[in-house]
Image 1 (spheres, one colour):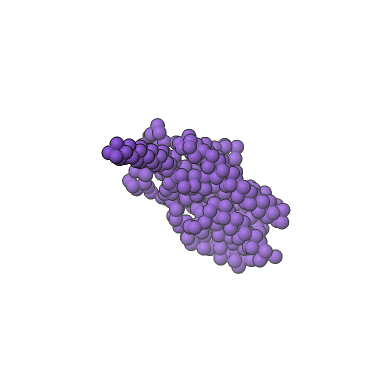
Image 2 (cartoon, one colour; image 1 turned 120 degrees about the vertical axis):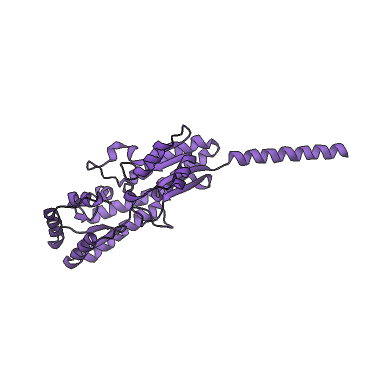
Length: 295
């Protein structure tokens, strides 16, 4: 009987040890995303096998003026995978990575995945291009397969689901492009430059837009030209950055309203409780509704 008890306890110990080993192997992969836009893509691919920490997840935060804290630096130092936009959009993250190099950390810079996709004007808002979102998802899948090979099949399935979901965006873009071909539009900042490329629409006043984005005061002549495009209804839409509240933006929206030019608010980050695909579809629906009201 004593021998039986010893054998039974030995079996229990062996099973317990295996469970502990399994738990250790199943430790989720830690991912830090500079912005929630990329964090949501990482979550879609990694599912419950990853822990994602998005540093900027408040749509009201200006990424250009964001200052990282020591707590953020510690999160980045511990991360196995870091995802950022690049092109100076989140240079605070680039500084943290340079200050704490690690041979065990993998870094994905969205804007560097395919240089051919970058607009000639070096617009940094690459996340409005579904092709860039897919490239990020594909790169994440490859890195997650390396980090957690036992879950490789799951990551591939999640990628295929994300890719299928992303088709809804490209289909909606095609429908909007066909319904309103060759539109001329403008914006307070070049936030949706990559979306406009998908729609094959022309953006007027881009010098003005980039000056505003870079906190460079546009010249009086430049401002006058820009305002004339609104007053004379030379554009079908005005896009404005919902994260920016300043007298100039308010003035331009007022001129657009008085001139009968519909205005569409856009975000630089995915709003809370929304997926990447839902965010893109919501933006396209808002554009469609604004154009519908203008006719």
